[in-house]
Image: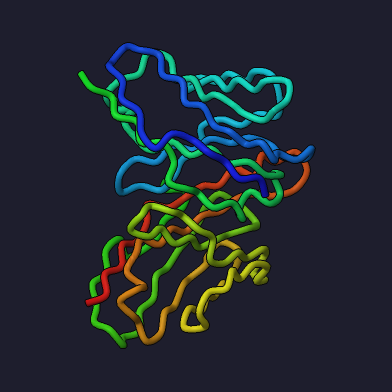
Length: 111
Length: 115
């Protein structure tokens, strides 16, 4: 299972675009990149998953370069309610449950 | 309507006691899990059950005993509680197999405090 590295914390202001980058140099061929969001006193919630290039859904975009050694979660026009911890996880989908959710990136959105 | 529900939400108890946390999912998933989130916020898998069968036990002390009466329920019983057991325990479920994203659906957590 590939190890991931992401910033411990980030600050932003309402209305800004936030990009959180995750490094995963040892990503394997079968691995997908998945991001989860966790609010205080709640369990993590799946945000987005991708294998290569770009994936977009109603919540976020995920940019993955050709070498797949990193990925960037992009949150457009954040609001106060986007304040949360964001986890980057890498692994094949059938083993995703084995992944350790590390310390993640604590995003604080200020008014 | 809650997809994954666990009870109780809070549990405060003395060292040496035995306690249980219950979990139910109404998503029709085949696989359920227990995770432990410690004070540093690392969230780590403890157990995984697929169709009532244990498939993962990640070096958890045998004081922890999961039980799955059916594929929609996975309960966690803890014997002889220790201070280090204080944490938030999350139940989760997913549907594995071809075409699945492996997305984990988590409950709201059960905060256990051992005094």
